[in-house]
Image 1 (tube, rainbow, N blue to C red):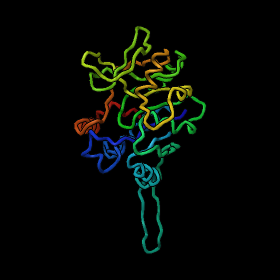
Image 2: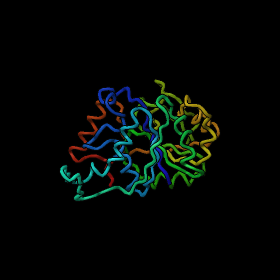
Image 3: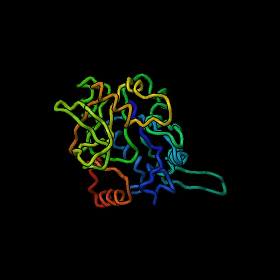
Amino acid sequence: MKVVILAGGFGTRISEESYLRPKPMIEIGGQPILWHIMKEYSKYGFNEFIICLGYKGYMIKEYFSDYFLHTSDITFDLAKNEMTVHNNYSEPWKVTLIDTGLNTMTGGRIKRIQKYVGNETFMLTYGDGVCDINIKELLKFHKSHGKIATVTSINIGQKFGVLVTDNDNFVRAFREKRESDGSWVNGGYMVLNPEVFNYIPEGDEIVFEQTPLEKLSKDGELVAYKYNGFWQCMDTQRDKMKLEELWKTGNAPWKVW
């Protein structure tokens, strides 16, 4: 099963870092947060990734192009123009990097990679959030209800778009936050059947979290997987410092590998 990661945004709320590199390439413990997310999925056997690029996407391409250089001990003999790799460790990953446009919104990016997903169920998450969720349990839950879409719902407060669910966990509304809302929010880590593409109109201006998810909820095709474990988005410099401290002290809950 393929994992789609949205990695094309500008990351304006963490501009101290993102003016130099795309947000998913901001490092935690010496590795991009994108790497941490991929390691989470890989732990559960999901090793095929489609990464939606945009802002400074060439840096993500260069990272994977030179991945073995980042993970190996190497001797360069400049006189002989030779390179010796002493230990060559690589991940069991197949990574497809797609330029989905500089200013494209989330829905437009997902629509652009439809042909790479094919007619099969796939996973989708954001390139700036880590979690200690059991991916196999999430997939099992998705298969159990038989609906088009599952979104992981995180109890974290009033910062993000809001999910309104009934007693059976069906999502009845999906909208931006209001002061009167509860605290169950969209945490990414979605599982989507290929029919979801029918809910995404053509156009780079389409925001997936608006019309497509709203229509899915109205049709009774969007179900929340309520999760009370660890989840953290790297939205600001303060968030980055928090994640860095957790990693540095050996208390990173998302490190399940």
